[in-house]
Image (cartoon, rainbow, N blue to C red):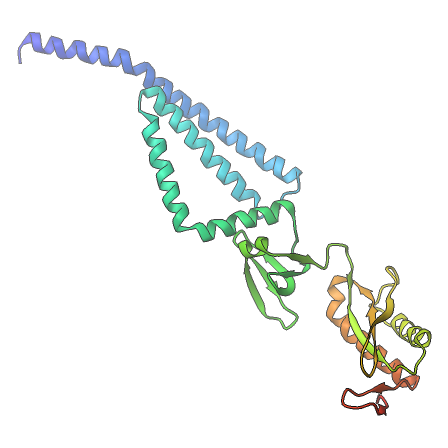
Length: 274
């Protein structure tokens, strides 16, 4: 290699350094400052979500998503400064995201539904709800599913996507829950008399709330009996105990007052035992 060739390589190296060194330095500067800003924005996002009373389960996912997105933007900006064609990189990322989305569309649907549930607080841990036709108490809310515990202590794992698609019945939203029971009375009896007996029985149940007041009314006329709707209110946690207590108290009150009912297989009146 002669002196002329070495001189040519030297000038090319100097020209390359003069041309690209500022770009590389600018890219490094953008990465350093950009990542620092991303960290600050993520910290501010955490504080903002906490002040807005966002669910503790959803906050890490939202902040993580924001953090990754902003870092990708910073890297693409740095790559553009150096001169790398970012359009192709964005295209590759979009194609990869589309492929992953197709493969995990069910999970992504549950994920999105979980975000909606946690952000809008459709229900919370401890609520008594009916989700996708399943009744129980909310034990945990995860990003992909909701855990219910039934009155029979069965654990139900309900996908959040199915929850959002259907009707959500939250029995605890108002702080009280109404017990909906039916009892029968014979046609020969006086409804005001029976109503007073039932209301008096409900007053003797500590779990039954005075406000809202219990309701007793005629619901329908059957072939042998009049069906009465008994609607007392209890706290959500007392729901099942309240049902058992109301049944017991009404039966005892009917027995104490000698109230008869007609059996479904005939019109003969029968007494109610203790």
